[in-house]
Image (cartoon, rainbow, N blue to C red; front, side, top):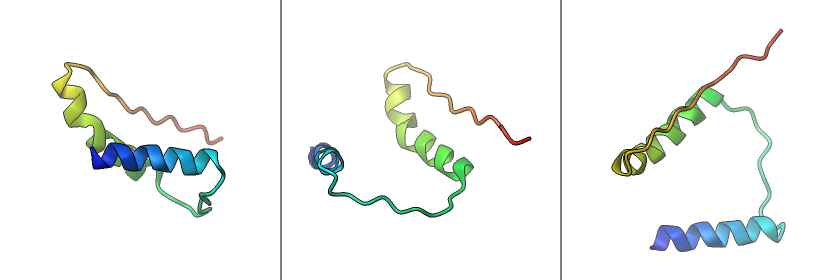
Amino acid sequence: MVSLVNDILDMSRIEAGKIELEDKPFDIRVLADELRNMFQESVEAKNLRFDVELVDFTD
C-alpha cells in the first residue's frame, strides 16, 4: 500500500513539474532486465506474458 501511495505522489510531482530528471548515460539492457525482474512475479501470477525486446537501430 505504501508503494502505491509513493507511486501516486511521484506521478503528482512529475505532473506538477516538481521532479527534475537527471540526464546521464545508462545501459538500456540493464534497464530492460530490471523492468522484467520488477514485473515478472505479478505477470506470472496473472498468467500473462511480459516480453522486452530490444531492437538495434544503429546504422
